[in-house]
Amino acid sequence: METKRKQRNKKASGKASDRSKQLLIQAVLSVLVVVLLFGNSYAAVKIVHGQPVIWNDSFASVGTQAESGSESGAPGQAASGAASESAAAPVQEWNTLEAQEGPVNAGAAVAAISSMVSVPANGQLSMEYFRDALFIGDSVTEGFALYEPLKSIAKVYGIRNATAKTFLDNAAVLDHGHNKTEIPAIWDAISAEKPGKIYIMIGTNSIVRDPSDDALMHWYNQLLDKLMQTFPGIPIYVQGVTPVSKACAEKNSNYSLTRLHTLNNKIAQMAATKGLYYIDTHEALANDEGYLPDEITGWGGMHILPSGYFTWADYLRTHTVYSPSNLQFLEQGPYG
View 1 (tube, rainbow, N blue to C red):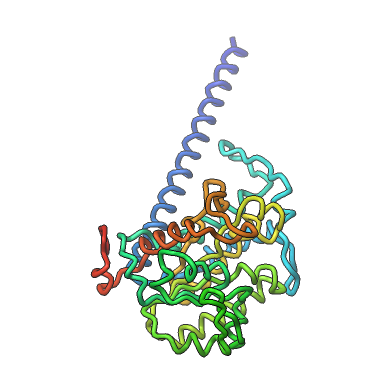
View 2 (cartoon, rainbow, N blue to C red; view 1 turned 90 degrees about the horizontal axis):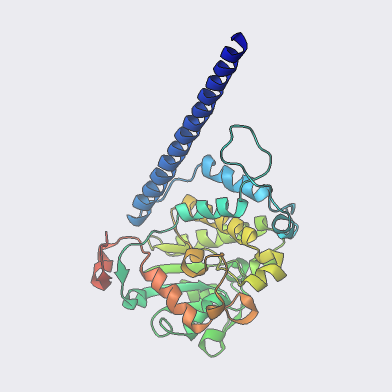
């Protein structure tokens, strides 16, 4: 009898313990959901009304942790994301209280952070909104000068093979987007413009031409500072590096998902710190796998076909920071 009683007590104790674990797990998950919802709502409200999201160490630490697990390049060396994507990450058990080894999905974690500070959807403006827009970038940006819907509307300096340093050095360039026009000093040409808003995207070339991410971010940081000094009070939208095709990502580890998400996280952090507005180009253009869809993939797997620029422009005109002057372009609401 005594033995049976002990067995019953042991079973009851085990059930109570299991129930306690389940309740604890539910409580933790509930807290996480509330935190994420609050964070996204806070960021969206701040950004859409033109207020910068304050970037703190808690955001930066997640990006750093994800990066340390995905890239091993030391400062001054070209980074490689091949090892991170080829190594199989251990499966994480969600329903256990025991500590586990192995990282969470680093690429997903970093992508989530950059999305939190990106400009949220806010009404739909007409393409005329871009009439006073200035686009700055490389050959990916060049497509806006070559193709509809913005080729006859926006001012575009999309310079082939350009990096941030191309503009900082005031280099002589050929503007292929405008019949190979010779521009003897690119920064002089840009600084002479009178834009109402600026869209910039740097990184497609820098990611392979600059010696490291530190170098890339150093020059990009200087270029953004120069833009802010030259065009005080003008909204500046900093766009993340656009997605590439799956074939391109698998062929060149510099363009792997983790590599691009990690770099875009740094760009988003830099933009938020400066009070600028980050545009999540992966949300705009990537498919469910995170790659540039085949139907809009152009040369090299990193360039975009003409139809893709309609998709991109549609995203930009539905993700703007509120301004009373934009109300004249409003096609669909709500906007505010």
